[in-house]
Picture (cartoon, one colour):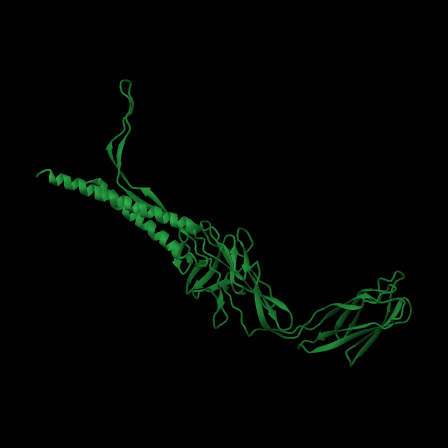
Length: 391
């Protein structure tokens, strides 16, 4: 039988595989996080018809004569170039701007994906589109996150509360006028006890001379007074602070210059209890919760995985990958560190399929298939001629 028949068959198979890969690429043109694949061909074993000979003094050398036996698919490689960004406006949608993968847990299997269309399940766990639980690090009660620890399930308890914090320090700033009509400036601020109960602390100043003031701190029930004295330059007040019901009132930022009255509360710690109102994911993957008391606190941080050879990952379906013996060691870390890309919230990474290139590859595969079918047709005609010799 003719070797060309089998070469043509191998060409049909190889180009059919290329058609399958191209068709899959085109089908996933709108799949978030999808990475296009390319087909690589190589020739198969060649049959040696005549071996090579070395040159001698009386005769030149000859090259080997070999006949190829067809083609086969050498590899189907994945192109991990980033896709375009699509803004969604959803706070739970996130994309990686650079290298790396989101980490999911599906049962006992660890998956990696570029699809950042995240949502929550009924228990508050952060999950991917296929239900895989997103992995990362949860914050402790103080809001600290240990990215050096093992990764685990990320969740945001939607009914979580932020415990109240007692006020310990109130800082006043601004200027108390050393002259002029304003002789009794005052300001107030809400302070909180350990149970989050708010009371109004009022600070009143009464000028007694160009450099001295009577200071009165009151919560409506209790009053504490002291005398505040400025230096000759109108700065360095004494005392630098007062204590009222366990709250330290810092007076060190006050000045006593002429003509200005700008007394104000610079800062005050403490807060009432608060419930979670919303959250946002930052470029470093930290999920920051916003509470009803106006405070924010880190809730957790998404882990981003990198591997030595991303092309060595095995596709597991649902736009996810699993590690293989040739993908290399998986390393977890925070977004924006090492070779890991930063995150962009409210956006998704679209497919990196180039339709112009894929339609060109479709034509190449189709013509290659047709050409190899002509090889089989021509071989059949030759065999027919051989059969007809006997007539």
